[in-house]
Image (cartoon, rainbow, N blue to C red):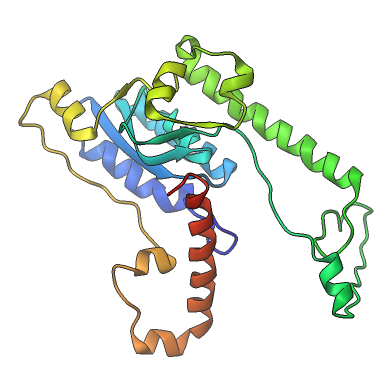
Length: 257
């Protein structure tokens, strides 16, 4: 997941775990478990490319398993799989691009605050939340979003191809679906879990070795409360983590979780 104060998954943070998974596997399979409501399109693309590169280099097939959510950037990662599976209650899709924020113009006027911005470059201060919104700035943002959306669409079409069973206007609308509907649409290949599928492929004696990615911030620290010394040494970090946790809560709540 990605929040303003915590950039979420990145290739730099996950590369070692990804490479270890491909090195550990003695079978022609690597399973990737995804549980993400979205994040950076660039990092999603970089992680996607690294997964595909290693699959080709190591001659292994990637099986992706969606957990609670594989949406937006989470689904971008999922299409790195040769086959994609989900739980019956998983939420899948949201192939779109979003930008959200707040406008504070009226609020600062009521407080008697003046906003002073000086720029070199007429577009440098565009979409400043403390200044009135300009139609030309909004259109510029929408142009950028369309470009990023086109990249996302291209990757999904390349990876899912003829499996997609509905018109583009539906599948690429930014909507998200239950696993059953995602299967009908062609976004996933079946409804199952990683252990069941791996046993189906490699027999009941197959051993699954988990390779976790590192957790950081408050979300990772939930496993280990910070010590008094850590809090005293860096009290601002706790506030940042709290804000990020609230932002992350907002991302998950969009999918009813």
